Image (cartoon, rainbow, N blue to C red; front, side, top):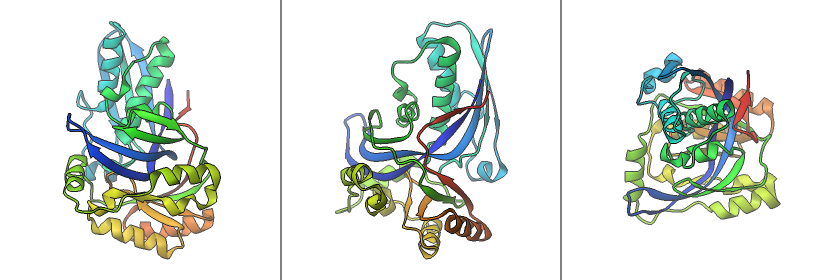
Length: 286
């Protein structure tokens, strides 16, 4: 079975506290977008095999492990262990989502493995958040208000069909480092996450006014500032970093404006793609 597994962006992202177990509590509006990895899963007699095809520009920024350290491998292991199965699988991942971008590339791969194994066997796992905080969302996809460590997911009004440019430089951001920086912020300005969710439902064309990300105050990367400035000069309605970084998304009124912006960003040496917000995480290919 082969699927396209969507990336996500955070239309808004706030950190609301630190839990006793060391995790951080968040409030966020998650949105799946039309930027995909391809994940294929085939059942075998035993063992887990994983292979990856990673574009050079992604691998050079952040080498992606293609072994038992990969979250997709861990997803298969959890699936078989929880369901008491002695079979195995062969997984192949073709990366199209940049790594260390705040777009959930690893988590969507893990969710895709769980989804495919579920379709192939009729079974499931009870707590996908064991694999990572973003994994439960990708099993739902679309637009969602997300709380806790990412496991409390409330579907929001549909925000699909919006035109974006997503861009990233060579620099990556360590999630752990980004959260440490958030912890050290003094009097941070918090994005109005709840107002964004309400605007998406009641006045979606003005919702961009509430886009925001607390991590922009904690993660200082010149490339992020450069990308954001170029998007705004190209008449983006809003341009915001996603996740803990370092990708930036810009919302545009028309595809023509978006294409023009993406072309300029590519000439400056950035990864840049035009895409739309989408209502589902997975597209079945075969």
